[in-house]
Amino acid sequence: MNCTTNGQLRPFPILQFRWWMPGMVLFAMAAGLLLYAAGATMGDEWFTVGSGKWWGLTAVLHLPFFVILFFLVIGLVERIGFYWKGRAPEQPGPLPAEYPTVCVQLPMFNEHAVARRVIEAAANMTWPADRLTIQVLDDSTDEDTRRLVEQVCRQVRARGIDCRVLHRSNRQGYKAGALEEGRKQTDAEFLAIFDADFVPPPDYLRRAIPHFYLPDGRADTGLALVQAQWGHLNHDESALTLAQSLWVDDHHTLQMSWRSAAWQFVNFTGTAGVWRAAAIEAAGGWRATSLVEDCELSFRHLFAGYRTKFVKEIVAPAELPATYAAYKAQQRRWTLGWVQLQRLHLPTLLFDYPTSWLRRLQFFYHMCISWQWPAWAIWIMVLPFLIYTDHWLGVFGPAWGVAFYLLPSLFWLALSTTMASLETKHTYAAPLTPTRFLGRLGRMFPYIFIGAGMLPHQFSAFAEGLFGPLHSEFERTPKAATVTKNANVAAPLSRATAVPKKYRVKVHWPYILGELFFILYHVGWVILFANAGLFWCALVAAYMALCVLCLVFFSRGPYLARLVLFTNLRQPA
Image 1 (cartoon, rainbow, N blue to C red):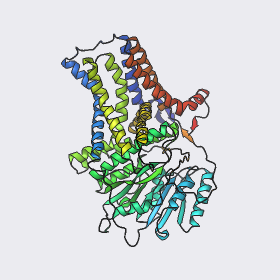
Image 2: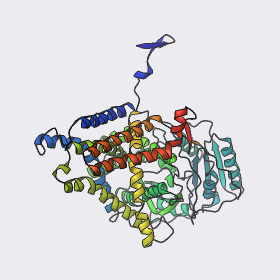
Image 3: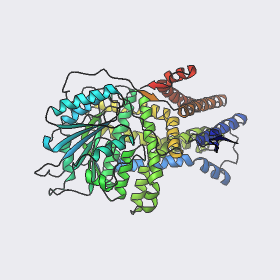
Image 4: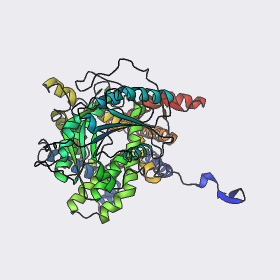
């Protein structure tokens, strides 16, 4: 049945497709497995264990696990390959006698807490004043923030530095739109970009720009990007920031170093990088077609034949999200954006980009890394059913179950954590002592807990990226201006500080419902396993439910209370 508007027929909204509908189908299927197991007898397999049909069905039900193994294997190759290619320092070339022109772009939106810090840090970078421009691309809608930005920029201009503020009347294109508009207003040869939560060290430009030159002093025009290592301002603030610091150290120091040395390609991380302006122009400029506009631009450069470079020896410290709500907002945007990028460019990578099969496989892994989230989420929901119905390898003995299901992930985790703790000598100022090394190893425990608790949230983000619109709203990650003692953080120009403002994080109800279903689903398995005497399995299911419950509580607890009262459905960061 249709309803009419101005004489035209239109379908009822309930018939329109929504991105969360496929997830509902999957959850319904998972609930069906749980209900089937509740009505069956423990060990009631559909086929005789070891028969051809049993192996066939078991293999099909293990498909999510095979996807996980694929990513684990290539991930191990990258980390072990670091010692072959990537560990040696990157060598810069000499700067020309006349320094090239550089424009430092600082995109921000309502960054009241950190705006002064990043503008002053950019102004403190060492570079000839007549060859340097700072663009503050401020899309803030908060008048207090806009006034603060104008004030700090006036102070910087008083020092003889060209510091310009670009306020747009709308946020068209979000961050990508601001960067593109700023790019069109400068003729600088190089563009250095920093998010508002970063504090670039004074020698950043002097160390990064030389990498665009060959040893003989000629410009390396085929190099489009020099990406620096992310450092940390608040890595030891909480279990959350410790877990994030492990991920950043592993991904940057190990993975990106390997990719840069072995394949001459890394994606821009959205900040702490320097672009050759002519390369951006040649690739078509910034586009807001994905929430990871930085990665989307990087792959267009790959397809155009450019190289990109990662330099782990240059470290730009940054503030890690300090609250679970902010962390979830960041991870949603990244996962959703990477899936959007796949919709845009995966066909080009697979069928049109001329390269060897090995490079294509590596770039496929690189572009599709977000598939790990649905693979893990589906696997964690299917595995209890496999155990209960004897469609898993543990039916041949506990040793088979441990070796096949636990050892690959544990080996990957132990290796990556150990290497990330040993090889980040440029990231941390303090020398690595046995005590500090053990402390960094301990980061794997909150990393596991938070990673498990993020599964349903990230599954929803993946589904939204796959089935939702390409042009999604760019939701900023709230910053709290948390700064610990760090030698690379420059002193402020002025002691006058503004009272930090709190902004609100949008809450997406399909994500919350997915998390609540995940909790109830594993509670159901706790009951089934406990009744069957499989107490270890019940304990693991309880652990999964607890991980998700804790993250829901820490990030959504106040919101859920307000939801019951139907009031103020946005929550502070």
